[in-house]
Image 1 (tube, rainbow over the protein chains, first blue to last red):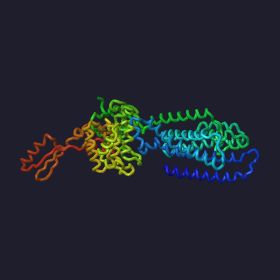
Image 2 (image 1 turned 30 degrees about the vertical axis):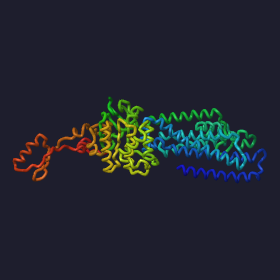
Image 3 (image 1 turned 135 degrees about the horizontal axis):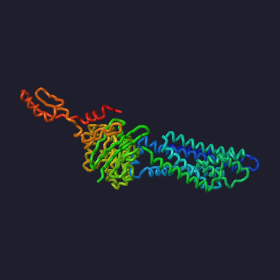
Image 4 (image 1 turned 135 degrees about the vertical axis):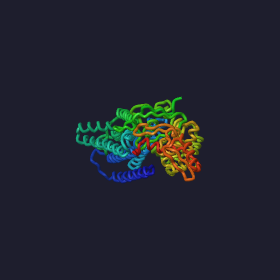
Length: 264
Length: 280
């Protein structure tokens, strides 16, 4: 499995490098409309795409590592020998979360910094905030990991995998709705998108991360960038981070409580 | 000292289906108890409640005096599930090491070596689980259940994948465990095995105990068998007390008697009578 992940990730990074190389080679020849800095626009747009790709790959990895932790493993007979030991069910669940996190967080950070380095090297463009957006992406993946663990208590592996990807898709749609709302100047749509993004805070963290990479970019360039790819940039700040942490704990408590009551 | 396993009025319902309908059962310290019954009788459910995998609807189950499912109860038992799987990439030694950590066992290398030796897997210590036959995995499962020197061993169909030699290994192992004072609840379909090793058996049917006792107590006399020059003759319904008179009569009639023995029903016959031919 890890060989497949490594090969595909290397493929992703290689394609991203190729995209950067051709884009920045042609940026010099482009005459953008007044008020737009072509290099900043190209760099931040490409890196925004990379952040979405990184989030998506991190989510795929997290979901496949955790979709069958409880029901799936119990149906396969892997879980019973472990949970009858004195360590107990909560410990097993927390250990699986930490295990998945120990794989996914370095993976996400690795991809994030690799793509950042490529854009920096090819286009001499660097994000306004270096570390925070990466941590927010990793936090988003941890939230999906926790949701997947919670789902695994109640759903079979396949049903859980489908459910989590649908929730992830719903977050993505919320971001796109926010984009449309901003473009049309519809406060209702923007508000609905914000509520939806906070209901699944991995999306709100992603939007905050997008904002952070261009937080010092202003003018028309800044406006266009914040319409950004796959979900517009939205400020979340400290409140969002605290909410994400509380959300993570709440999902964890629900998963542990559900697991404690589950017949295996 | 409390019993290794004490179950009273145990009821378990899965929705509208009643798996256990008020079971009372006990396993004393050092006792080897067999649990018999057709498929769906509730045997696995009972074992799962005892090790805390399933919560009872009502009634009580205690392991060495602690409520089943609690940390204290789980610390006192070892369990081999009917359907289990170990990660294929682990070796036998690594798997036992993991369970030593989970059970907080301080047995170390010596315990692992002893357990693998006990189940006849000393040669496969570094072999990966995925490279083992089903029978080897089942014996590894038994070794895993014995990690941490449990006081009560719950074995759910431990010999289902074993060949005759493997079954014999397990039988010898069970006798060794009894010698060491470990209590065992053995859930098995192999009546001959249960008859050979168990001190007592409980027969479950539709979630209730329909027969219980030592195999010799459950066995009923069903006649006598006398070997004469004409061959072996079976006299159904003749009791042990009537045997001397019968032999005397045969001798008086001029027949040579070479041997005589009282016939009792086997555990299989007791079982079939108790479950009334029920299979599912």
